[in-house]
Length: 150
Length: 104
Image (cartoon, rainbow over all chains, first blue to last red; front, side, top):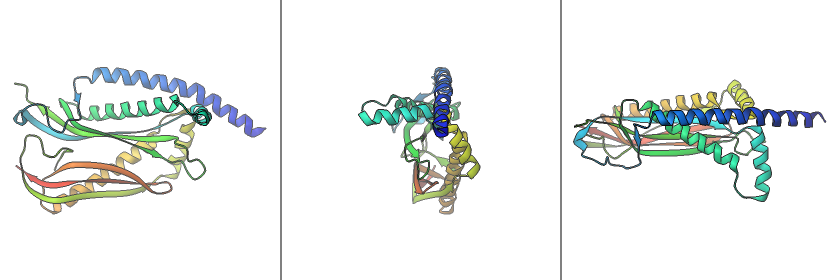
C-alpha cells in the first residue's frame, strides 16, 4: 500500500513539474535560437568561400545532460509494450540536441560561422537495477571561424 | 595551441605532421551528485551536476591531448574528435584525439 502511495506521488510530481519544466525549457530554447541566428551552423568541412578571408578560428564545444521525468518514464515503458512512437523520448532528445547546439553557439560569440558540426549522443545508465535510459548526454562541437567582411 | 575539427586550420598552412595526439580521463560520479541527480530524475530537466562533471572531465582530456602535442613540438591540433564510453558501472571515459601539426 505504502509503495503504491509513493509511486502515485512520484507520478503526480513528475507529471506537473515535468510538464512545466519542459514548457519553460522550450520557451527559452526558442528565444535563444532567435537571438543567436546570426551565427551560421553548417556541417561543411570547408568554408563556402575563399580561405584568405578568415581572420580567426576556435574549437567550440557545447554539452548538456538532460533527464526525463518520472511520469514520462513510466508512460514510455507502457507504450513500448505496444510499439510505435515514443513522444516523451522524442521531446527529450530534441531538447537535449537543441540545448547543446545553443551552448556551442554561445561559446562562439563574435564568430560568424561554425564549420563541421558534429553531434554525439550517449546515454548515462542509472545503475544495475534500472537500465532504461533515464538521462542522456548530448555533445555538439565544431570549428568556429571569424570572417573578414570585405 | 590552435584546435580545429576540420583537416586544416582555416587561413593557415600545415607544414609538418607529428602524428596522433590523444588524451583521456576516466571519472566516477560523486555520491552526493548521484543522489541529487536521482531526485532530479523525478521531475526531469537538466542534470546540472552531471553536466559540470562531464565538461570538467572533457576539459582535462583536452589538456592532456594538448600537453602531448606540445611535447612533440606541434603548435596546432587538427581534426579533433571526442568520444564517450562507459568502462565500468557508474564511471565514464572521456576520450579525445586529433592530429598534431605545425602550421604557419
